Each structure stands twice: as structure tokens, then as C-alpha cells.
Image (cartoon, rainbow, N blue to C red):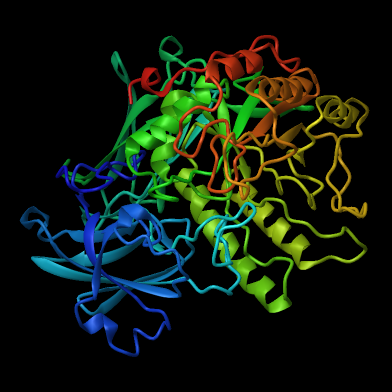
Length: 606
């Protein structure tokens, strides 16, 4: 891969083929302020400017840095298909495009997709020589849609940041045969010491088999094959011998290598992909969330995944690794990935680091408490996008919980509302897609699902004594529950689930920052006052034996929001070892905390 191509690393690390072509780099580009480009024939001529993909036009790294509203944007690029791919189908992949996308190849529509956070692909069939790719991305200002933290005002404000329009993750293509492997689902089964593997196949051909080989440092651990001509998905179990059994955990994030092949009746390998797998379990025992059968207190940090120069896109792969290392250095063992579906490369690094992750959808802006027509439109789109996200990330061992909604708020009255319908739809869709992990119906505020696996709250109180008192009621089944400012009830009653405070802290620590910066509470007068407040708040939760974890706001400053452990440029405000020492005191929830490891020391065979 050429050194001048931005973000050249393989974008789908848990299903890797040898042959692929990164399409990041310079594309033709043009803004379409009135969204009239199709009628004006914009796709039939060269575009007026250029852009560096995969960075959005609002970002500095795109070469444009235009922060205005962009109802529609267009991209064009000519690609030469390698001669060695002759006769194979070409699959064109987009990691994420915000928000409504249409793709044309050689003047013919090749695909459409709605949703700014999730991947999609276009099957181009066999192609030779040059092809021309044309992309239109629509991102209207006022249409209800899942925006996450993107501001609907011209400027960022409060906890909303600059917008992202168009392509913001890697564009790439790969060749496949007419019959090929689909992305596998890898389900660890700790009780059986095995992995359950489901491998889709695009078509059923007589005599074909799917073969899977699990490996470690010693070589082949187990190999299995099943017929691929009976079912649309080949199902098999890879049982690990007792002597080769090694678990994935924050203390030892071990990963097995996994290769998968589609073999025809003559023994010819038709398709092959490399993957990896981590053997771990997540379970609930009363109020405890167990990892591999043991209580592991989840010291999570809120991570919004923004960068000063790339915005929602990391400037390089090392930046993704660095954010995990920064969190570990400060004593956290995981993160809640907030209001954004992160690039999958982040999860790859989290898998290698033993870094616990709660996956979340960027549902803000969807209008689920707005007008009735908007509610229905956004609800259907949200469920579709969220299922795409869960399917993409299902096999990553780092993910220990799902959070489809965040801070929805509406009075809990006698009548069902659209918010009730949306919450139930997102919850049931998650449970249908994944029975192996706990699901939180909504993080903070309006809990509408009585059978939700987890219950939580957001509490930004800054007085450690009052904060501890507010959180202490959990021992008597009276946990802190968010409600309206007028005391309005937002949620169903707590029913004994595992409970954690999934947002707290947010201490406004910004020495020398301009007045438009903000955080929670009054600014500490000194670094010592900051550390004392941090210690008081975290200790109140570490000392609570009924609580399985917490999530501190936040890892880095993000634009005007100056309440991070680190500044926006990732430099430290406070020596991270001081915060680590505070957090590594034994939690009452567990007998002894696991020692997290840095990314580069994590690994396994994968």
C-alpha cells in the first residue's frame, strides 16, 4: 500500500482477505448547496474541487475545512481494477457515509444506503480496466436522523460539535468469486470451552464445504469442516482442548487465530479469510455483571471519538491505539463509546488490549420525542442502522454490553408513546441480534423496558459527600433515578438489575481556557482541588458493593466541552498516574481488580 494513501490499514480486521484495494486519497468533490445536482447533471462532468478521502469536508485533513451546512455533496473517482481480478465480482465497500448515499458506477446506480454510522457495500459484478465511481451524500439540516453529537446550529454549542457530511471512513474494494464467504459470527462458549461459528455463504453449490482452523502459538488447535450446500449459513463448533484453553480478559487479552475457507468438490479453495477470536463470557448474577464468571469492576470512561484535525475520523491508526493507552494509563479498564459507532479498527485495538467496551448508537437528533411523522420515519431508520452496527461488531470480544439509546426523556404517564415504541424496538432488535451480552434500554433518563438487563443513571453532582448519599440508596433497592426538573417521573421502577452510574464527574478543569468553555460544577482552583474532587466522586462508587461499575465523563476535552482527563490534543492536564492510583484501589464489588495492559503488550496469536 502506498505511503501517500491516508488511513491505508485494512478496515475490517476481523474478516480479512489478502486481495483488496484501498480507495482513500484524492477524489473530485463538489458542494451541492441546493441539492439540485442530479437535475443539473452534476454527475455528468468533472467536479469543481478535490477532497482527501476518508476525511469529511468539515475537517482540516480533508483539505477543505468548511464548517457550514452542506445539504448534499458529490464525489467522483476513476479506479483501475487489477488485471489479476479478471472474472471475479468486485465488491465496493464504504465504511461510513453521512447520511443518505447513492452510488453510481459507470453511470449506472450501484447502491443506496441511509445512515451515517454504518457500513454498506455495492456488488459491481465482474469488472475490467477502469471504472468511474460517483457518490452523492445528502445530509439535510432539519430532517430527523441519528446525528449523535453533530450540531443542528451553525456553531457548536453545549455538548454538540461540528457536523460531519459525506464520506468519513475508508472506501475500498475487493474481488470475490460468484460463491463466497460472508462475514462470520463468532460466539464464545466458555462453559463448553468452544467457539460457535456461523459462516454465511452467498449461494449453495453441491460438494462445497466450509473449513475453519483455530490456531495458537503452538499451531493448529482444532480444525472443523461442514457442508456448505445444505444451509445458507454453515454452522460449526470449534471445541478447544483443555490443555490449549486460554481465556480473554482485561488481565490477559488472549486472541486465537482463525482462518476460514470455502472449498469446492475438487478440493480447490474458492475463498479464504483470516479472523481471530477471544474466549470470554458475560453473565449476570443478581446485581453482578460477571466476566468469565468473576466480578470485574468496570472502570469505564466516556469516549466521544473526536479529533481536532479529523473530527469523527482518526488521523491515523496510531491515534486509535493511543486513546486506549491514554485511558489505561489513567486507570480505566474500558469505555462507553458515546453517541457514535466507532471505526472498527478501534475495536480491533480494544480486543488486543483487553479493553472493555459498551457499544452505543448515535441516536441524538432522531426526533423520537418530536412530531409524529418524524418519529415514525426516524424510528424505522434507527432500528435498521443499529442492527447494521450490531452485526458488524458482534464477534469482538471487547464488547461486553450494548446501549442503543442515550438520555431519552419523556414523562412516564398512563399512555404509551412513540418513545415507548422506539425503546422497545431498539431493545428487542438488540436482543434478537445478540443473546450473549446484556442490553441497557437507554443510558440514563427514561428507562421504559422493565425486562432490561441493566439499570443506570447519570449524576453530575460535584459534592462528593452529597454524591455518595445520592448513590447509597441502591443497597435498599432505592437507587438514584433520573427525573425531570419538576420531579416528573421518566422511568419504570427499578427491579433489581445490575446497576451502574454510567455518567458522572465531568469536572470543569480548563486552566486558561476562554469563557465559552464549560464543564460540570465550578472550576477547581488548583490541580490539587481537581484531584481531590475526582478522588471523592470515584471513591463513592468504588466503595459501593452493589454497583458493578461506573463511567467517568470524559477521556478528552471535545471542542468547547473542557471536562476531559486529557486536552483535545491528547496532552495530559493531570499526571495520569495520579488518577490511576485513585482508581486502582480495590472496588467493594470485586475481591481484587484486574491489572489492565497497554495495547502494544496485549496480543495473543492473532
